[in-house]
Length: 189
Figure 1: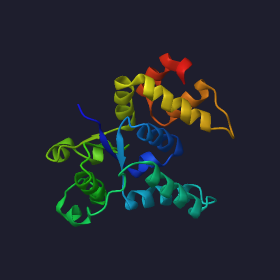
Figure 2: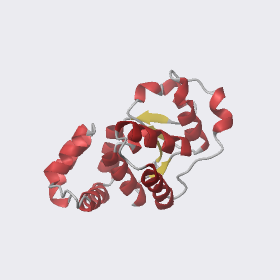
Figure 3: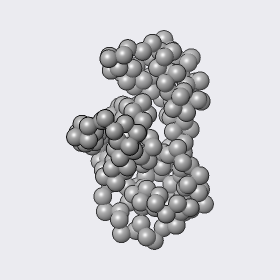
Figure 4: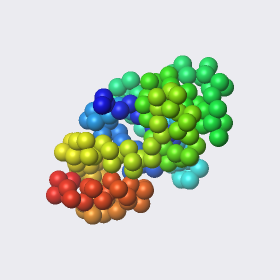
């Protein structure tokens, strides 16, 4: 199997613990990530709704840094096919359109039910929950995955976290199987 090309839904880019882990894994080339400016706009707007004290310019700087840190991550030119697609939630059609144009084989989202397999399969795409996707990546390359986790945890200097505390954060993000598997590697993270 070749390297996954994963379109990340906005609900993966916010909250920050998921975004940080996915980006570190992508920067280390465990898989390739893709997104659009519309997806960036979605996660930034969601964060500002929930945390209005945040600074939009700082979040837009994060967006720019994300685009610069990952190769070929920004998908453009997908808008023309949005209206030709059918999904349970029409507002999600831009996600599928971007995945098609971006040659992605997986859409990583917390809303897997919004992307029916029978619809996605005809495009060679599947929807996966972040736990399912990350668990698969961990089992493929445990050493590199643990190195990425260690790097993310080491960057949390304002509030340093023990391995157990950091894994608890990931578990609260719904990464149950991934954390369960990571626990055996705690000395490496």
